Image (cartoon, rainbow, N blue to C red; front, side):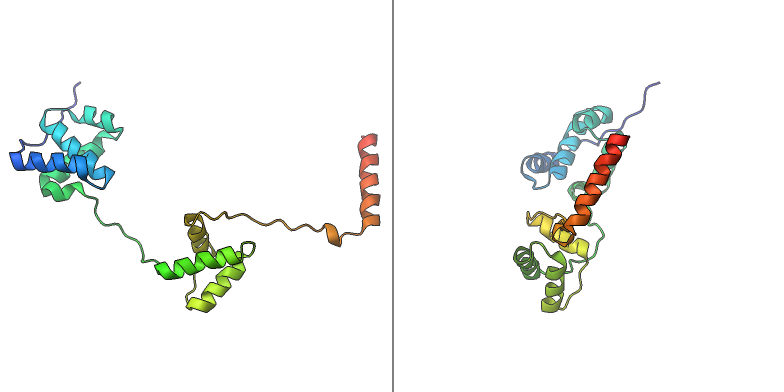
Length: 168
């Protein structure tokens, strides 16, 4: 059974020129792909082939064509997405990076200092994202308890473990 396919309606010269321009010069990769897909569809390329070219699902390509039919060029751009505003301004983010560099082994201290300086509370994970964006490593510091152990007890336990290993 053959699946029915749809195509965009014939393009006029202005639309075709605008799509070629978007395909070549748009900032967003997605807009360039969608513009090319519209051009391919107008030339008779089925949705399945376009989906194969861009390794997208055929329903996704179909929605690109629907958005073109409904909104024209404006339908090729992504719609705004939800999400809250950033907690820290650019200047405050730079300050956070500097604090992380000042206290590389103590992110809690950097977070407390940032809260004190800016008066804004951010989470540990927000600070971690800022650090990763800045290219700073984020690792847990392992603390050694070697200086706090009793050497005599340690040696006795070590010899007892060796004895148990031989016995086993």
